[in-house]
Image (cartoon, rainbow over all chains, first blue to last red; front, side, top):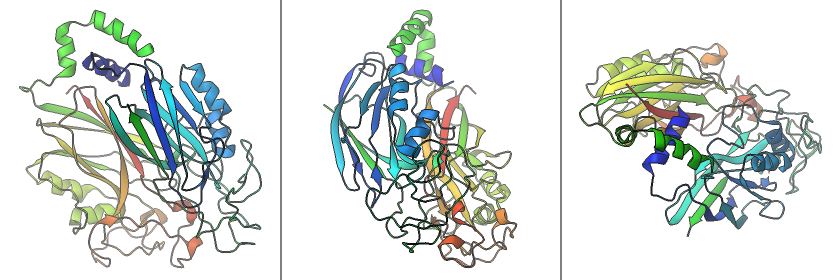
Length: 232
Length: 230
């Protein structure tokens, strides 16, 4: 069904520049209060490729990104299917309130854009968007992005340094606001598909309680990021 | 690259009449059919059967800031979409109203088919989050007149509070925890608002039967509407 749509849409847009290579000016802003983004992966790709899909299980590569910020697997996957990849445009973490701006050159046929980055401190939370239609007419286009839960790790909210896939715990809080000594919030997660993150719970006890996170610092509400694409 | 190869093959094999069918509506035939694919993006909030209503301009299943109808109250407090659908069926601007076949679990998807005879169809839908007092995921008055056959529209839906029942989160009041469904008393603010979310017992609400895993953020659902051949 989807394939058919793509084919018909391509015919209808005959004469437009939708399938052409483009130079895209991209700006990404972290809109959260105290959540850092690990190095971003931004990909222009065809309509058959995805970094992730809502309601579907995470790939091993997505899990590695969501639990530890490692984008190498997703980058390899994207390049193997012909995607144009920008890795780590912010040269490290993208802090709350900060933005990064860069150019992405998309090849002919790569008319969808996706991105991901882990949200710290979370267990397996990530900011992302799956398959935006890259605009072709000259102009500035703004999108608001949500925080997702990869569904691969229980949200225990404990800072343990655990960032490898399958290892419990949160790698770190780069902002330095986290506590210690929590007993753990969730020991299992019930939705193992990629879904909208329910948010950090946190607590107000820096040396105990359930969570190592601070409820007055580490919460967020969607959207968590702004994406601006400028077509020149 | 892949797209242009596909295009080449199809362009070479399709007759120009077929091509026109793909790009333009035939105004003499106003029969419309849509697949409405609902995916639950919450962590632990199953959706009660979702009511999908295809209608023309003027019908309002729910209106933010306004009082919920009795049918919406029943849907939002108990999960039963029957009253909401009956109200829709009694409105002459409604083309078709359909209930989903069952609960949509977190991570799960159901496709509901709606059909009607109008060139200006619109869609509204609502389904309860069963671990709330009166929360429902909803879309209101989405214009589908621009969709050609085979085309899809992807939307995200947020959670509303029907405003008809106080958000106690107590086991006696939340159907997903074995609590009562409909209670005709309107002991909340009595207007529809964006849902303020689950507080939970883990965050100090002593009456709550819900732990933090029942919390949610918006959007709670992805909706893909695809126009199909009637």
